[in-house]
Image (cartoon, rainbow, N blue to C red; front, side, top):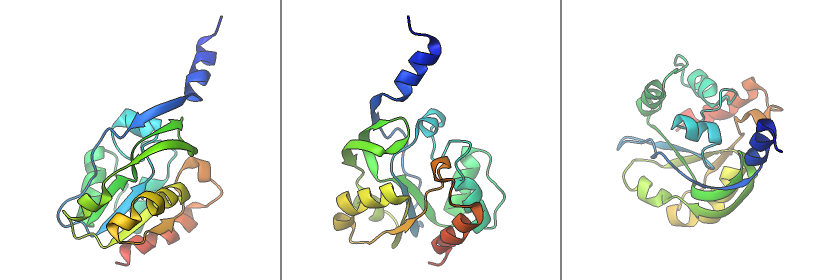
Length: 175
């Protein structure tokens, strides 16, 4: 008989079909687009981007933008929109094991070009190697914009120190 712990471990490691459950964050004044791959289980649970408590995304952006660390989803949205930054993911759906970008298969990309048509976006940054690779493969041709690859802020990328991430993400403000 399986224990609860065994069942949780099995389901966490199971290949799951995931659909993006919340919209892109943008407005007509957005000039920069940050793209992840697909929301993690914690982000889907919270209903917003970069929801894992150990993900350094919000701390890094707050530092780069000289803003206080946003605590709520509304504060996160306000901070990004104040600085004309849009946020979305390359994928609309895929199959994935947990939060492992390396396991992504069966992808359906988001229509990034349609988002660009509603904004002033001229610069696109991908928050990690997988997002960048997926963008190049599925979206770059339709947008006509080469994306800049930034290092992942995921807890899985703990080899890259906070200060190095801040330095890399400063590129977002040099538009």
